[in-house]
Image 1 (cartoon, rainbow, N blue to C red):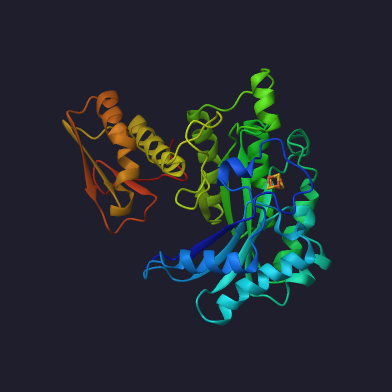
Image 2 (cartoon, rainbow, N blue to C red):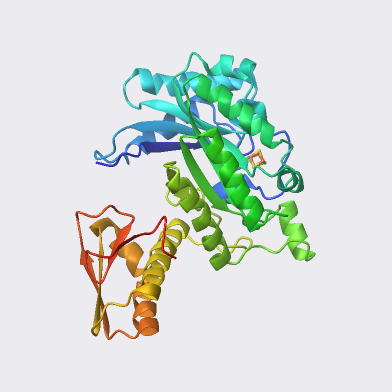
Length: 352
Ligand code: SF4
């Protein structure tokens, strides 16, 4: 059974946003232009989506995404939450979650949502670097994120942090400093998104004028992997890397520029396995023409790499005639045995 809840997404593009951040065009990402559904529309959408629920999922949550939920007018907020709460009261779903800006998390706003079965709140943190936030015209500071996290955790909500790689003025150093500041706030989970150049955004204008260069896909994958390792090493789950396939959160074909890939998160995990194997073979080369790599069955495709690229690269680079991948159910999913089950390396802590 999957431990992740089944998410019923309700997109509220730009609802409650005080302004547009430079990278954001939710209509391009979600394909929807209507900011908030009416209660009847919400009822219909949730009921329709619930038909796709797999029995193997542990629970389900109605999730308001794509806007600044706590910035929505109080009467609309209460209307939406009351409608969603009806599904919880009926036992059809287990709770509600939403994403919001850190600077709209205030005691007054939290009093509004208190009567409703909200389980998790995701903060659009993006960065903890003041300069990066200012260049993205976020309109909030790292202190807002710290305060919001404390307020939410103090009221018992699960708190998620959404981070971005490749924002204007961000560097590897400032990104990893963001990671460390986030870890100190102890969020319950993390999402990491690459910055894309979406149509109709200031970032697109900067891109056209040569004022912003998006990361290459390889660079975005590499930076995301560094953040991922940081959070994994501190036991903070990274529940998503890249935009959300299957939940509508993908740019339309041919839209914009930047490091978009439909399987971005998978690419990051493939890079983790590739680096670990390369690192291990740098100091220890199992003899013979065949290299055996052992992994948990769930990690086989991550070890192989997209279209078997990692296996082919390892074979060629290290001079083996064959690389055999062996399933090792006793292994944790982040481990790989190189040349057997004696030499086991971690894809989180190295060697790299
Ligand atoms: S990033 Fe969030 S706050 Fe900024 S415009 Fe987009 S939805 Fe609104």
